[in-house]
Length: 586
Picture 1: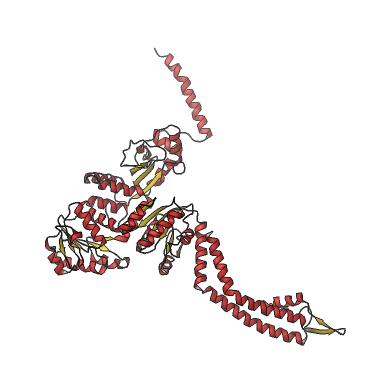
Picture 2: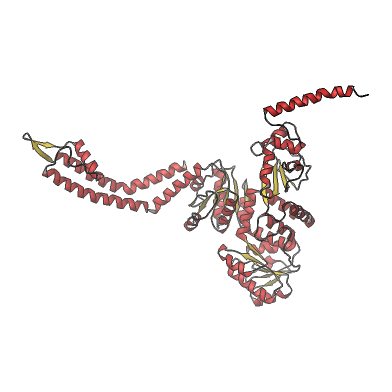
């Protein structure tokens, strides 16, 4: 229905814009044809000949295309030639008028927008691969699109900024990602983007306006109640409304930022594991950041500052706040507060000389970078954590050489990517955050032994007929398969593949870090961590019944009719000889 509406809109614009030129051409040629039929021709046998309407129409048809067959069907009289000259020049002016109008039409912004909408809707309709709808193509949206492209997942992009959509056209994505400038909160644009398309997996609202994100989520829930919605929100009021909606996941970038800051300070082994999972640049598994203990100075007490201070205080980490507009009641009793900008004087007043570190968390990159310079001058030993707001300032932050740079748009994109690609990964991280650090350290040691220095490859598989037919058939037939059995190397039996099963989801419940003897059932979802070369081998076990039986029993069964018949004959002979051998024994 959406595409038909777009086509009707294009047709309406064309007809409205080209109505006068078409009428002008029609009028000129109609007058020319009728006039040519009325013009007297040569006198033959005392009678004046005239051209009929068909011949006149034929003459104007080939002259309009400049073919020039000559004077047909007979030679013209002077009157007919004079009328022809008049009609030819009149037709030239009419065509100039029509061509000029056509050029103006193709440059008309409404026509361009309508055509873009029509082509966009057709691309979405023809798409058969799974995709997500991405509303908002700012820093977070572009980073998420890059991550989706790296995992070969398609996205359909909506953004109200025309420049961002133009930038989309020059990105070197590995998969097609159509985009259009449109208000993502309008239902017609969501329909054109495929919110009701059977291949649509999720809708992600990442605009910079919480009101727009809420509107998008509400519209999507009405248009397709079964569709998963992931919505970014930084407002408590909007989050309350969003969490009341069914099948909507709320992502707060400030909460994620505060969580990562706390992990870096108090749980460095968990911060290191999470960064390694998401492929953070320069992260080496088992080598966490070394953060000193003590009180921290928080520069900036906006919405993100509130989250950071609340998270650190809840876990017993002391915080001193520097902000010109800080509210002492919100900061809490006993908190050291300096009502100023984070310059040399304010940092000295907050006690920079004995602070463990500084968190520059304002919403202005220039202020955060200026704070880093002051901290380096006053206390070079202090640990420096800085908030990076705009991706355009990446070069400056690289040159600042802070101990830890957290770009909230990047951390948000990574969190959403985990929810889309491997949601069990985030569940595992959250589960480890509630356990003792020793459990995380033990997992890190296991992963180092499995993966080594190579980058991790996280992937999930469900034990269903489409993804694991051999295992599914074996379980349906009453067989038993342990988790560790699947990790056998069929090429070097009984050696193990370099992979680790991190989690299993069964009937909505998640089992973290299952052991090798864990019995599998149909419908289980398994999360593996390995290297890239392992996945094809494990997929062979899941799909090939002969490979599966080999890793289960260690016996390579015969394949094909002939070899199966030979093996069956040999088995019968052995079974027939066994009783005779028992009778000859004394």
